Length: 124
Image (cartoon, rainbow, N blue to C red; front, side):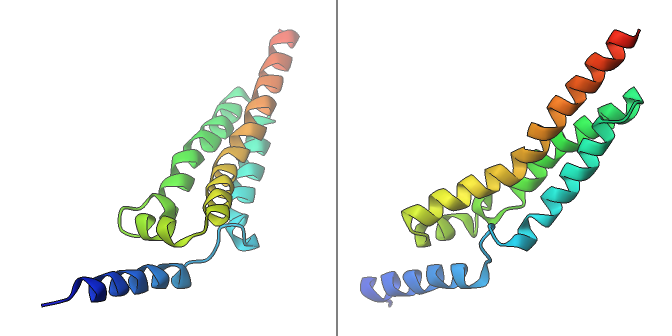
């Protein structure tokens, strides 16, 4: 039978192993997919063809759940251990970073889409 103390210590060890195997999302290579979506969605939204504008807007919208749900923060197996192991500052920074990476493409694409739609509406 396992003592309560050894259970607590082994749980802490397992949690400590989680952070050792993960990379922080604010490292540069975690921004590359977001920058790719930003460039392609923004470029499509700036197109003169309305069908491409809609594809650009939808690409930026679809990116939000893909980006968030693939992050370890929201997984049921790693997420709780990750949140327990991070300090308050790291938890806040992690969440802020993954939200930023998910929302920046739509924050840029939506105004471009609206501007191009408004422009094409003025031309007739």
